[in-house]
Amino acid sequence: MAKRKKKDAVNTIRVALWLALFLLVAIIVSGAMQRKSDTAVSDVIVNIAPLQDGDYLLKEADIPLLIEDRFAHPLTVFNVGQLDVERLERVLEEDPFVLKAEAFIDAEGQVNINIVQREPVLRIKDNNDLDYYLDKDGNQMPPSKHHAARVRVVTGTLPPYEDNFLTNEKHLLYHVFELNKRLRNDDFLDALVEQIYVNKRGELILSPKVGKQTILFGRYKNVDNKLKRLKVFYREGLPYKGWKAYKSFDLRYDGQVVCVKK
Image (cartoon, one colour):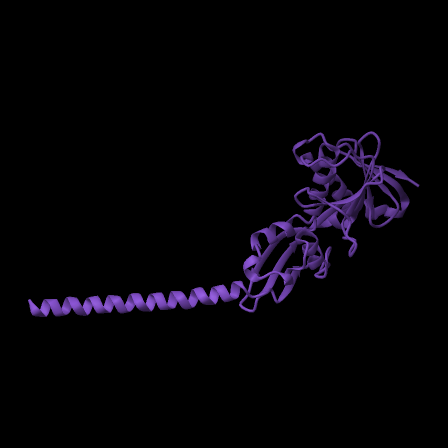
């Protein structure tokens, strides 16, 4: 009986010691966290991933200015505990050039920001003097003051941009966007076509990168067949005469490519 009481007492002391140790550690950690929370933000470090061509639509120096505009102060006037990192990420992702932003505060009180840029795939310059990019998801982007993205250009008679244009298969923006996607997915055609023009009848006219010919694509229908004929013509038929002999190539007639000589 005495041995059992002694064992119980030892266990009680052991538990008490562990609890005391736990409370001591908790106090130390809490104090360290409080000190860190009261520490001022020491610096802002920005890392922007380049586009596929290695260029940037926004610069690292743009980010502190953007943040100061939205937060009314630079981040370095805030204490670490005052800074809402999730809100900071949301603010950055509201910028039209930012696809995703991740932020964290390191042990030295520095705010680290990693940014993935939106990738423009098409530039729209219509007859109403509107000038903007579309990214791969169809989101509208303004021209960058730093860099003109090397993407295909669409000119001519186009309707205004609408957020849901990709759900409307009759929308002319849908037509040029989907045609551009097909061109981009084919290395040969992507290298061939430089520009798309939309006339008042809603017909598409392609301009090749080499030569002054026009490729009359017509309306956005029978697309795969037209592109197949265009590839076969450029690879097999055109070399016999040479592209300099022709003024235009017409894909609007089923099963053929109609050539107009100069």
